[in-house]
View 1: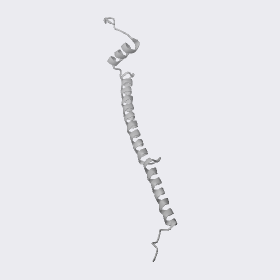
View 2: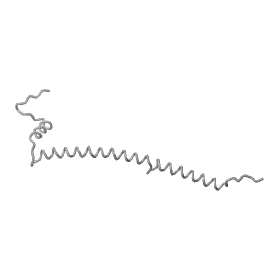
View 3: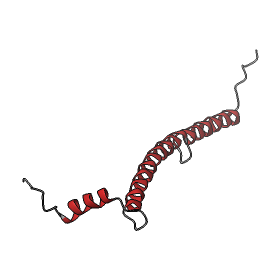
View 4: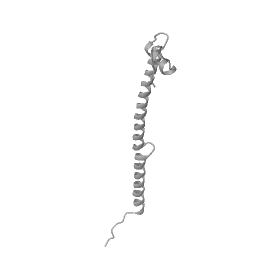
Length: 99
């Protein structure tokens, strides 16, 4: 009678080590510094920063427009009147203020 052959301890250790390495690399690929979750976080941060950049560019364009309208080359009298009223609190002689 022949005995059934058992896999050697070396083969078991090899497959166990390969399984552990596979689990480690899978975990690193999903949650590591360069993993999938980090990539999603970076994409969300990029989208938020892009929205902030667009908002700031709109605000800069608005401020440049107001600055140009109050410059020596191009003076918008309505804007000048509005700024004098809001910043300095000036009124015309024929106006009545109700508080």
